[in-house]
Image 1 (cartoon, helix red, strand yellow):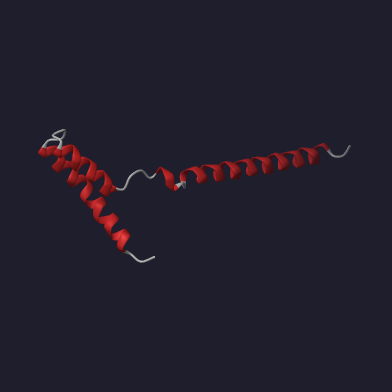
Image 2: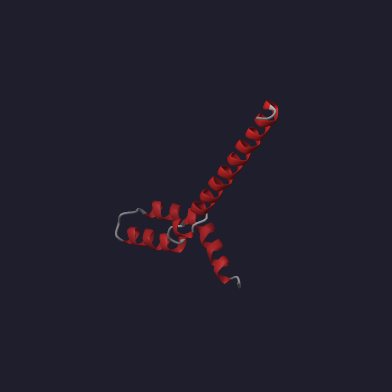
Length: 87
C-alpha cells in the first residue's frame, strides 16, 4: 500500500485543504449577510421626524426631545454631508 508516514501526510494535507475550503465558504457566507444594505434601518433624518411627531403628540417631553436631537445631531450632519458629496 505504500509508506504509512506518507499516507498520514497526504491525509493531513487533504484534511487541511478541506478545512481551508470550509473556512473560506463560511467567511463568504458571513460577509454576504453582514454586507447587506437592507438592514440599515431608517435614515437618521426620518428618525428625527418620527421623534418630532411624538413630541408634538405629547408622548415625549421637551427635555427628552432635546436629548434625542443632541444625540442625533452629529449623525444628521454626517448624513447631509454624505448626500451632498458627488458620486
